[in-house]
Length: 430
Image (cartoon, rainbow, N blue to C red; front, side, top):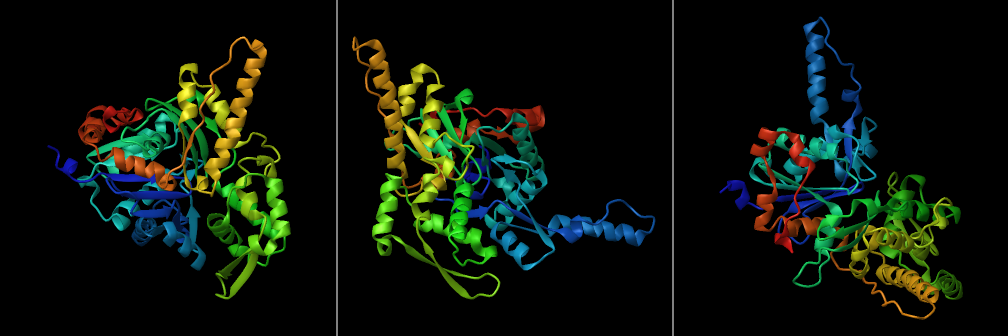
């Protein structure tokens, strides 16, 4: 038996905004870090090449070594960029896709050695990827993991499939459903049938968590709240996470706020990052207007007209006809931007209206000769949905079948990085 298989696997879910990492079998990730790398510009901007003088060659070599070592990730990286002008921030993942592999490798290196504090040669790895990731990206991931970190085994899982595994409510895990995954920098509606993603029906949502934060920041700025410019984005993010909720009717909500402002308007108190002085501001309409952009996207983007319920309906309607009822029956929420109070209830209500209207229109066309069976619409909300992808990976990597499904170092050496293009969906987890 492989000695590494007796140790818990490492589960790393890297997203555009945050990376969740920890050991398989745990309920929550051990660390949650912003997916960002701070690199020292003084080394990076040194001219490359070799001089005839040995001292210059030594200087250039030292600069190259220091450039490889002098960097910080996560909160440390953000703090370094604020306190020193010599560090610049690099975001290795944009819109769910890795666009800077050097920065991504550095991020993984710090994550494994400085945070998880383990030897990568002693653990199997489960990494996650966006449903729109090209096969070449999986090859790059495999090369880094097997060549740089010398891992014994690697499995690259599609994020929505893991989120679906995390959303089960009974002993049997239902692997057919729609995953509404809304993160900080990317949002997708992904249909899954028996553990396989229906790629042709994937829908992208033009609004993600960062857009909600920017919209709240804009509302507070337009109202004239006295928030320091350098702190306004972070303040808006905290307001979004702590005070926002989903309303059932936007007009009624405006009226409630206007009638009893003392009941609904909250006070936000913050500290200026530069001076340390405290400040306060009011939080009013943005409490419900922030999440409302998912149901009325034209509030923050005039070019967007399709609401989230309409996008989900379009996604399911484009899937094979024999899977549609099962997909409507199991719509699973995933990601921090689905955690707003009453978000699940509002989404289910609005989607049910769209579906029922279609059924009535169909009955009207048939002239009452035969009535269509009502379609059950069920949006699943669960306590772990903020870390649904990571938790699903933790569950999957805890099963014995996981180790047999992984690509091993020996297979990589024999066949090359192309083995990482496909990862089998195995039945042992459900």
